[in-house]
Length: 282
Ligand SMILES: Cc1cc2nc3c(=O)[nH]c(=O)nc-3n(C[C@H](O)[C@H](O)[C@H](O)COP(=O)(O)OP(=O)(O)OC[C@H]3O[C@@H](n4cnc5c(N)ncnc54)[C@H](O)[C@@H]3O)c2cc1C
Image (tube, rainbow, N blue to C red; front, side, top):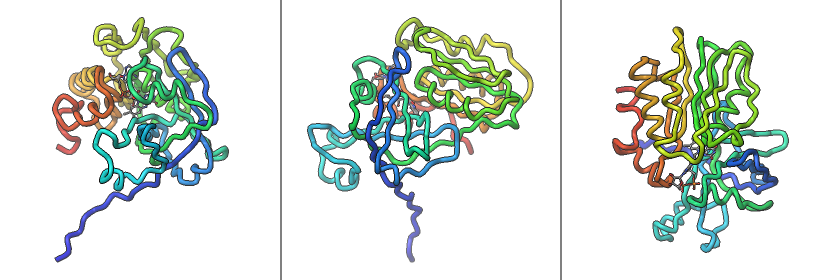
C-alpha cells in the first residue's frame, strides 16, 4: 500500500533589491523593493498580505535564493537563516515593486536595524505572500486595532474600504510624530493613542481604549494585531465578553514584548503563545 502524504507546494523565493528608502515617520522606514526577481512574485488578492523575509548571517556569504534543505544539512542551527514577518504595504504589479514599512524599535533585533541601515541595492529574500483579511462590506461595522506593527496592514485595509463602511480604527504609537495620514471613509473614525515612548506593558493604551468605547449592536468585522499580551486581552474582551464571532475576527500577535521573533513563533505551540484558547474547529 502506498501512503499518500499531502505536500505543501514550495513557493519560489523572491529575491529583490532595495530601490528606495524613506523615513515615513519618527519610528517607521519605508523601503521600496524591485528588480528582475519580481518574476517569481505571486500576488494574493487580499488587503492584508504578508511575507516571511529570510535573513542570513552576512559573514557566511550566502547568496539568495537559499536552498534551505541543503543549508539545514550543512549549517549549525544557530547559523541557519532566520525569518521575520512583514506586511506588504503596497504592491505595484505594473512597476514590479513592493513596499514594506519597518518599525524602528531601537538597536535590538535584526529586521528593524537592517531596515534602518539598508542601502540601495541591498537584497531581500522572501516567499510570495500569505494573508486572508479584506474589509467585507457585508458587515454592519468594522473595528481595526493595532500598534505600529499593524499600521501598514491597517493602512492597506483602509485603501480597500468602500465609501459606505462604518466603524473605528484604534492605533497606538509612541507619539504624534508617529502618526501617518489615513484617508478613511466618512463613517470610519480614527483614534490615535500615544504611549509616550516605546511599548511597555505599563504604557500600552489599546485595550483600555477599546473597552471604554461605545458598543454598537449589529455584525462586526474585527482586524486586530500587535503585541501578544494586548492581543490576548482584546481576544478575551471581544470574543469572550462581547461574543464577537471568531470567524469574523482576524486577531493575532505580531510580536511579543521581550521575545525575538524566533522565540515568539516557537511559543505559538505552547499555552503562553496562544491567543485563542482552542482551535477554530474545536
Ligand atoms: C503577519 C505579520 C505582519 C507584520 N507586519 C509588520 C510590518 O509591516 N512592519 C513591522 O515593523 N512589523 C511587522 N510585524 C512585526 C515584526 O515581525 C516583529 O516586530 C519582529 O519581531 C521584528 O523583527 P526584529 O528582527 O526587528 O526584532 P526581533 O529580533 O524579533 O526582536 C528583538 C527585540 O525587539 C522587540 N521588538 C520586536 N518588534 C518590536 C516592536 N515593533 N516594538 C518594540 N519592540 C519590538 C522584541 O520583543 C525583542 O525583545 C509583523 C508581524 C506579523 C506576524
